[in-house]
Amino acid sequence: MIGQTLGHCRVVAKIGEGGMGVVYRAYDERLHRDVALKVVNKDVRLDPSSGENLLREARASSALTHPNICTIYEVGETNGELYIVMEL
Image (cartoon, rainbow, N blue to C red; front, side, top):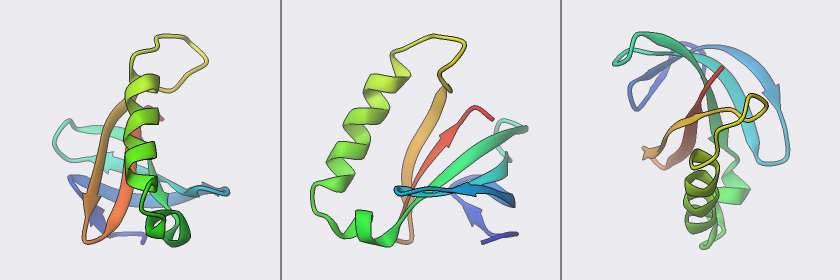
């Protein structure tokens, strides 16, 4: 995944991994800033309701403003990969 581009974010390095997916440091080529890019695991993507749940959670999170909550910039899908772009 390093060096690839999802949406308009170029993946730079792996930050971590969890139950929902892998988080990468990426560079948003449109906004010219470093971001965190979470790529959702394949098994989560295969669940028909996962896309809907992801969007619902992203909408709810993006409505919150708090220093301990990352700002969500974008939720998208490219070539079958679901991803979330958020504050690094």
